Amino acid sequence: MWTVVYMAQSKDIANKLQELLTVDGILVKVRPISKNHESNDNYFEVLVPEAEVEEAHSVIIEKGF
Image 1 (tube, rainbow, N blue to C red):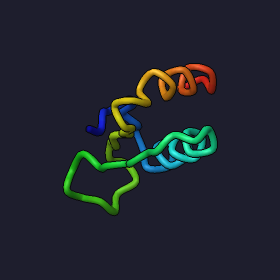
Image 2: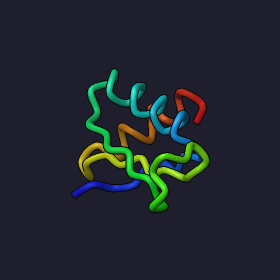
Image 3: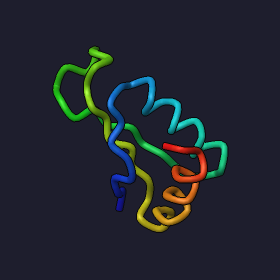
Image 4: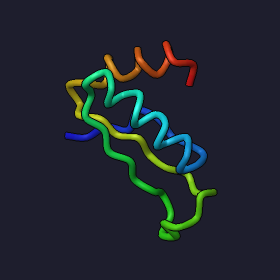
């Protein structure tokens, strides 16, 4: 099951976080909250598998998000 670990305020932030988590070997999905997928001003959910939530939180805190 996928779990939200971060709510990003823009697509750029979501993509940067996705890259950081992926480098650490964590599977990541980014999902827009609103239906306007093209806008960079939407909020985005950053999701990871339930088993990797603690590791993802550690990386997020370590990287200063």
